[in-house]
Length: 96
Image 1 (cartoon, rainbow, N blue to C red):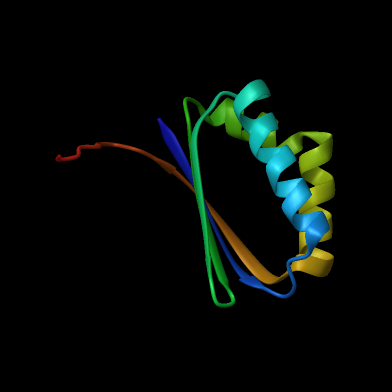
Image 2 (image 1 turned 30 degrees about the vertical axis):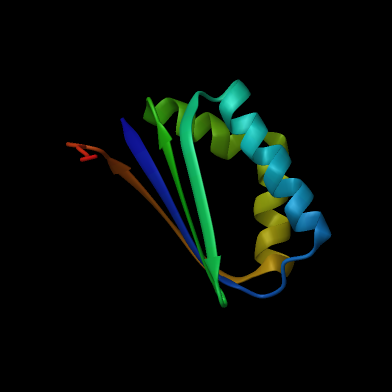
C-alpha cells in the first residue's frame, strides 16, 4: 500500500475549492482505487493523506484531466505553496 501526503499553505479557499475537493474525492474512490482520504485544515495549513493500492493508481490520478485543472487552480489561487510526498507503507497497526 502507498500513501500520498499533501501539505499546503492556504491562500484562500472558496466555494469553488469546496466543490472541486468533493468532486475529486469521489473521483479518486470511484475511478482510481483510493482506499482512504483524510484532509484537515487548521489556520493557514492544510494536510491531506490518501491511501492507495499501487503507485500506478497514484500516477493515473495525478494525470486525470480534472485533477490537473485542480492542481493548476490550486497553484494559482488556493495555495501559497504545497508539497507532495509519496510513501510506501511498510507497517500499519491500531488499538481499540
